Length: 422
Image 1 (spheres, rainbow, N blue to C red):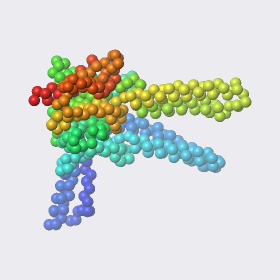
Image 2 (cartoon, rainbow, N blue to C red):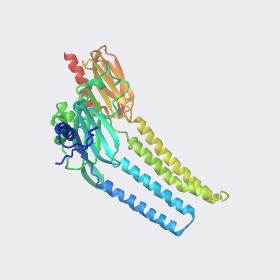
Image 3 (cartoon, one colour):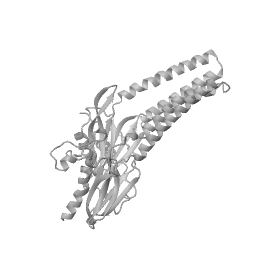
Image 4 (tube, rainbow, N blue to C red):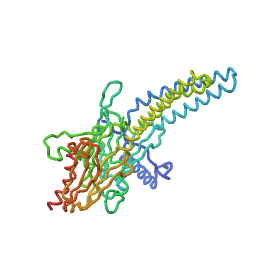
């Protein structure tokens, strides 16, 4: 196991250390203390950059080749146009390479500040810039080294990932009375960083650095079967990276992740790729139309029909993906008030930035939650609440069979049952 700690430290205005004297000893001791604290409070998690380096080779090769061609053109004293074109190609390649360095992460830096109870996570790219920065309450964060299956060229291998989860033990951000959680959702409960160096870091080493309990369960691996007292210790269902679809973030906060609809594809990634592919296939007919002789219909008409077919097929696929994106819900949040006398249920949109549907009510007035088939469909369900006065209210429609939602019903009714027994 290998863990790297940074040696860089900002010593402010100390400047160069003068020759040893009675006063300079104090300055030297202060300098050493700052260095020691920096080493103890920063941890660098290296990413496996072998693939990044290999992918950089084509950039270097093409840039060198284009530069050689440019030099030969200049020496040959050709016209200005070829030199300009090659120069523009070189500039574009350099800009693409800079973009490549910006988008790829070199390492992840964990910075803890115990005096402020703050953990800062920075993803540093190959330009030594922070590509993204996340801040957490140091007491509320759980960090794990997990594994996931990675498929490449018909081969499946196991890769390691870094999982950073917010447990919201400090309930300030999810307090139903004082926060704005009823209006704006928590977008990300957890963050995942893939591609870290394998067999280099462990959950224990990172949690020791953070001063966290090594035995605390990460909510992303929450075992709903065990929680329900079932005989099976295997979680009933998973989302990406083998994370549980049901997560107990804290006693006040549960989350359920619905299945993705088939039309969702891979969200905006699929949408962008479909647009690019459509434009790529359409570029041929468009060029043909530009060059075709409009007076000769036997040349012009087939190219026009081909272009229309490509655009229609691409347009249909794009519309289906957009429908899937709009239909998809990232997760359902179940949040309780501090005294467990109020329940808040919310269905988030596809990217977790807003609510599609919310429900809030006093637990004391609720008898139980039930799930029924929606419009006699076996593929859709509707969550309902039965009040103590026997009134029934429809809450949220779910694109899943009701028999697959026993775990969700257990979570919803567990606190109701406990509250009624008090």
